[in-house]
Length: 124
Image (cartoon, rainbow, N blue to C red; front, side):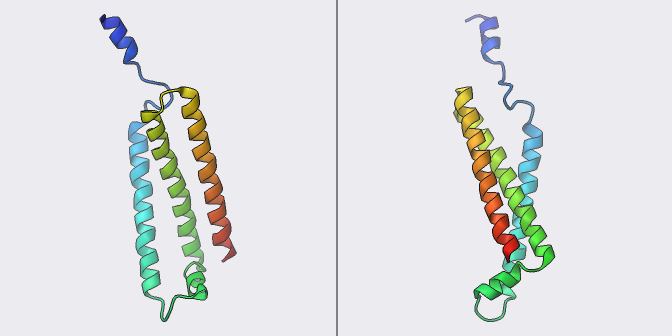
């Protein structure tokens, strides 16, 4: 094998190169927000007196600041999942068209799930 053919085969795909550090930071930032939300939610549940009924559960999310934190967490989970799924698809799915379809499908599915979660949240 010549050096030229090795270099041609070593070229990075333009479908995701140069995003490494930014994606790494975003994954960590969204994970930290999700951890914060988990601790806040556990604390709020532990502070509920008596059995946790629907009314008590709805009361946990009724405060505007809790709705805001929940909204940010839902968006963060979606972003976290999109970045993670894109990386998995880039690593394991080689045909570009299939990788693009899978990524778009994941983005649409996560968007629908986030929309549904927000609809449930704002009905409380």
